[in-house]
Image (cartoon, rainbow, N blue to C red):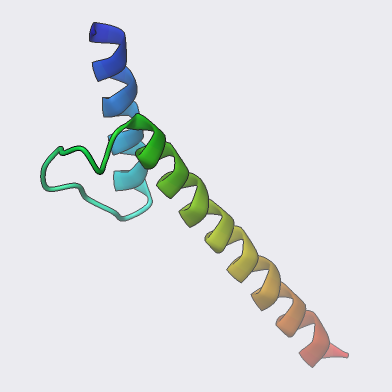
Length: 61
């Protein structure tokens, strides 16, 4: 149980570092849900970064 709470806390902190704060814990924000959400946010950041880099490169050419 302690390990599960540590993993939950880790994912909660990971989401906080991405700008998403969780108000309360319920059945909709279990560890799997938190990890999927963090991954989706990171993928969106990467996608947006690549798009902005491509746009910058195209403007220079």
